[in-house]
Length: 551
Ligand code: HAS
Ligand code: CU
Image 1 (tube, rainbow, N blue to C red):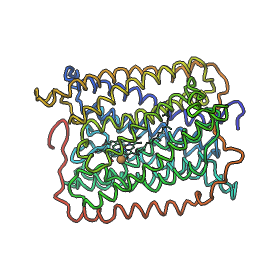
Image 2: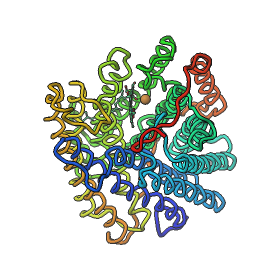
Image 3: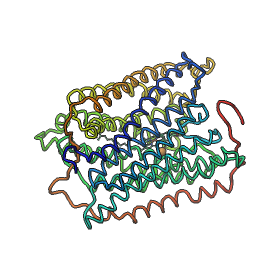
Image 4: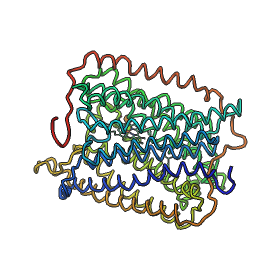
């Protein structure tokens, strides 16, 4: 290890390349989000004939898919390098993964910007994009698979060198997340390669819509955990160090991650509860499994409270809520993720509302759902990612997290919280009043019901504008941390266990067992309904191109 930095320089460059893509995406995607909230007020029309659905596609793809994937894979490379190391060969493959993903991203972005792929980030059929859009997505997925295998190899090699030893917690977590990602992306790869590409090339006339959506959501739900788990890695494996505490329970943390591996995939139907053509019994089974996947998040909540309380008690706080005072609220490395955690309490409750069959009837396809993922993804996960960046970027660039960075970060966190509270709050309420998501209309020709929504749509524009200020602040801080902060060695915080901690059962490292159970659960939840969907499918659909019209 290079003693001049907290991470070997060559490994730092690999992660930093990912960070560049992530932060540039933040700027572009955030600008698109701002424009959307303006359009939705009904007072502003986009200039130069720019189409609402085109910018909505840019927003969704670049933030939900590009920013997240690059940040996560880059962060995970850093964690692996720090905990189990990275060989020259592994680093070379890490770079290959990066370039393949970037090539795919660029191809996809060009098609969206040319207006030939205004299909939104879920690219639901029968909306059809230019074939290059789907090829681009394929490259992103293939590149990420290379990254998966680099991570798998890193842990495998470490285990061979340290026989019988427990793997480092963060490396274990990275491998779980990449295993979820690999299994999940098989679904999206199947629909893109077998259905979308031949159909968009005109080799086949029709597409089976329900099959494509089912394969998409087989991927789409675990996708949200692929975003969430790196935040959990920071909560379990880094935050205790930052607050001067210890890991509450290594075994509990691993159990939570294993439960995610088991339950995050066989639940995609909770996005399709209102879709005809799927047997209600199997929707019911997948809803039960959805409630099961909330359990590891509840374990996480318990574990975090326990960490906070024991850290407070170790500092001498004795009263019931004394630990609260003992937390380092002025340290942005703590504050940003902590706000993310607090936001996850209502955000997760909203998720359970969505998953309830009857309540889904009220909220599905309304802007409530947009509110839900701006709390989960754009608050809980992103604030945690920002919290990570404040120490990670200095580690990567050989600089210090100085008082100025900390101040900027605290301001950023406050601005973000305020903007998101206003925007996401009004989205939730407007959704309950029936306002649809993904619609460029605002006043619906003066319809009486739409009048109820307008006030909330103004509020969304106000929240969106505050958030955009938050993005500019974050970008400024990113450049400051990259180019101007004082040089030095910043700490890479990795939490430790208590000296007298219980030993973690070795069964948690039995990969064959856990992946085996995950596959059995997926087969159970999907095989029969999938055969049913194929056997009883209605006629397929020809491509429909927006905004040109039927092709
Ligand atoms: Fe979701 C739709 C159900 C979590 C993201 N979700 C979406 C979409 C996205 C998304 C992007 O069942 C829209 C997709 C689209 O475009 O159509 N979601 C759930 C459930 C959970 C859940 C059950 N979602 C997430 C997370 C996301 C995310 C996480 C991103 C990162 N979601 C749904 C459903 C739909 C849906 C339906 C479809 C809706 C429809 O009809 O279209 C659960 O995982 C939530 C469990 C979470 C908890 C909370 C635990 C709390 C913790 C915090 C502790 C706090 C501490 C701090 C310690 C049970 C861990 C305390 C300190 C103090 C000082 C108080
Ligand atoms: Cu879901």
